[in-house]
Each structure stands twice: as structure tokens, then as C-alpha cells.
Length: 636
Image (cartoon, rainbow, N blue to C red; front, top):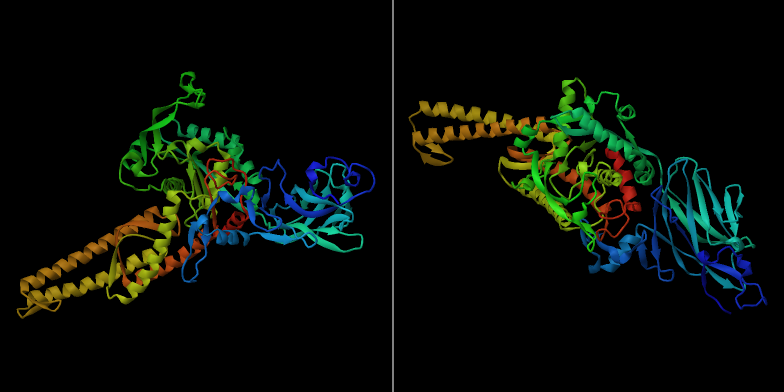
């Protein structure tokens, strides 16, 4: 008997029953289904969440992850052997088996009993009331007697299914969708309609025999799909010279014309079940006729230049005309690229190293929000929700077109520079960061950041043990990242403690001045003059410490944006409060570390269609990324 795998896509529109294996009509052959895979269509453009792996049907070895070759996966998070450790990201090449096992933990595989072939059960997330179509791809084998007569899938109160071919010969019997094996054609679709919000549930595709017996031959897991909402106010960052309102309007018009909101809700963040709302949508609807003053901050160039927030620097750019097209004289037909020239450019200074100064992050998103909120206060208004900042200027960093932050977990802002105002996937990428997603690749900067985070975490653990054993009454700081309320309380505790200390020393000073006896200081004999001098120096030092703490409190009160803030100045904390701050930040950091662990897989840069990749066509999220984003809603 002649056998072989026949892909459905090669059968065209002929019926399976018409296949003549021997070139004659001596016998009619049946077709057996070896396996069935659920996949997206070639037209898929992020309309719903979908993730899968391709495996060797005989061994189950991973071949591809969401269509990307396993060889493009570069790092994975290896769980620690010791539960007290925090694990590590390592190159996949150093432990391939552990990497494959880590990946398989996030996907389900099915072994089909009659063929012993292995297929994956993909993840799907679609919104309530949405209808989608998936491709059913199968491997067929001609046999004299096939086991299956039809394939089927059962719907329920949450999902309705239909199996469709070109002849539209699929059948429905109540919640059951089915199709005869003899009707399989080159294009089999699984049509799914979500009837309402649903919990996570697996739906099996069955191969059924006329005898009534059936086997699982495929399926899909529908992810929990409650609609999650995020609301952003879109504001503009412009300079105060000329007409700031007109500049803001131009930025808002670009945002509106780019259909950013539609893209986020239909082709990107919808994959994780999110719905993005624009808090000032009315402003966009009436753009050109309404007052924009509540929706922009205009800075003074001279003031921000002095603060190192704004500068004019030389940037290397393509030599283009006013329309943005490469000048004829600058086009290289061999390299097929435009020549670059040096162009003086006004920029927002992200990091002062970009303008030749020491490495100092300006946190321009926080600066902009602070100044914007101060402006609202002058108008007896306020706003505490999410913010998208549209900058009228480029970033000083040539690699930065926009940014958001994974830390702190409740960060609710993204900064978009003028180079990326109309780049829709930029917004999805940055909101992805905001919702806990790291880049899908590791470069030197990413690896250093991870290692620094791990080292800092381990340092905190060591510090707590060390400080508990030490006898120092307080610790001198130059910087800290801590919960604002606890930090302010600790700063004030130190001030009150030192005030009482000073009262005691001033009493000793007064008594010393009136005494002519023997003097000791810290157990050592000293003269009266030395005693009085040492006391006064100690008092002055404590007063200086108090002044430092008062300044630190002023900085916090001025700069506070979130619950956890980084403070960089000289200040002092009592021993017990120092331990308390370390323990509190440990808990905060452990929550962040859970998110770091959840971003367990890294690919080579530009090797995927993932929205968190660089230099690629951004289309989709992986299922573990979807879960991270959905889980992050609790922080908002």
C-alpha cells in the first residue's frame, strides 16, 4: 500500500474520496487524520491574541515559537536550585534542555493516540462579542480503513464555533460544530464568536468515528478575557516662545490623524484584552475650536537650558528636503541609502552625558508631569491618572524615540518624542513596558541592568543582616529608593532624635563651662578647652545632619510623583528605620522580581514580530506577555 502525508493545502477543491493512489479506479481510499494544528491566517494583523509553538510531531522537540525558529531564542530565566536564591538569565546555548523545558512549561502538547503524533494546543485571547477565523492545518494519510469520519468541536455559553470550507459544508448541531473528513479541502477555517466574558478554558477538537468513539486530535485554550481598561490624558510638551497652543494643537492633530487609539484597541493591546480610553477625548473631537490650555506645558528655553533639561546639539541625520525625501545629490544608488549630515537640533536632555556632562538621568517624564501638575494647581485644577506626553522636540539620545518604565510597578506614563509621534506601534511598545514587559532581547545595556538589579537585591539582603548586628545609632546616605511616606517619617524621626541629643549635649556644654574639675570625652581625659570644643563640634555636626534631612524632605515634597521614589542627596536615617526601609524595599523589589522572572525568554534582536522587539515589524505578543500585562492591572 502506498502511503504518505498529504497536506490539506495541496488538495485544492477535489474531494478526498476522489484521490486515486494507483492511477486507476480499482479501489476507493480513505483518509486518516494524523494531526491537526490551529493557526492564524496569513492576513493576521494582531486583531486578537494568539500564541503557539511548532514541535516535531514524532518527538515533541520545539522547532519554532510563535513562528520564530528556536535557534533565534538567546536567553532564558533559569530557576534557582536554592529557593532562597533568585535565579538567573543564562544563554540558552549553555543549557538547551533546561531552556526547552522552561518554554514547554508555558505551552500544552497533545499526543494523538491513534497516530502517536504530537501537536500543540495554542493560546487565544479575543474580546467579548468579537468574531475571528483561524486556520485548521492537518496532516492526512491515505489508508484502506480510516478511523475518523468527521472532526468536531463543542461550544458553550461563552464561545460559538463553526468549521468552514470553501463549499461551506460544515454542520451545526446545537453547540456542536462538525465537518465530514471527506469534505476537508485546502482551506479549512475555524470561526469563533465570543458571546461574553469568559474564564480560561480548553476546547478540544475531536476526530469522531461512526461507531461513536472519538479521539482528541487538537484544540485551543481560550484565555480569560475580562476587558481591562486604561485611561490616559494626552498632553503636549512645548516651548513657551511663539504660540505654545498652536504647537500643542499640531502635536494633537498628528496623534489624532495617526489613529493611535484605534490601533491600540484593535491591533495590539486588544491582544491582552485591554481597552484604551483617552481622558481628554472631547478635546480631540473639538480640536481647532476648543481651549487647549489645560492639556500642555510650555517651558522657558532659557530656564530649562540652565537646568540642563534643554539643549541644542549636533545630530547626524539623513540629508533630506523639506518634504522628508532624500536629496538627489545625497542618494547612494549602490548602498541604496541617503547620505548623512550634521544638523544642529533642539532636544530634550534625557541624560546629561548626552551634552558632555556627567552621567545623570534627568527623568524628564517626571519633570514634565510635576511642572504640568503645578500649572494645573495655579488654575485650581488637578489630574492624577495616566498620561501620554507628546514632546515637540527630539530626545538627546539618538536611540530614544519614546520611553516608559517597568519600575515602579504602578508607573502610569509614557513619553513620546517628536520623532515617534506618528509611530503607532511605539505607543503599544511603551505601554507594554508600563504593564510589566521587558524588551524581548538582551543587549549589553539590558544585561547590565538585570545584573545590577540582582546585585542590588542581594546587597539589600546582606545589609539587613549586617545592620542588625552593628551598633551604629544611624547611617549616612547619599541616595536611596524607598517608599515616600516611610522615608519622610524616617527623616523626621532622625531630626527629632538629634534635637533631643543636642539638648543633652548643650546641657553638658553649659555644665562644662561652669565646672573646673577633670574632663573626659568618650572615655579619654581632655582639657576643659578641648572638652568644650569637642562638644560644640558635635552639636554643630548634629545640626548639619538635621539641615540635610530638612533639605531632603523639601526635595521629596517638591518632586514626589509616585509612592516609591529615588532620592539623591545627603541625609541620615536611624538604625531601626534604616532596617525598616530596607525590608520594605525588599518586599517592593520582590514584586518587581516576580515580573522580571515572568519575562522568562529573550530572542535575538529583530528576529521576531513581537511588539517588544526592535527593528522589526511589530504584530503580536507572546502568551506569557499577555498574562504579565493582564496581571499588572492590579497596580492601576
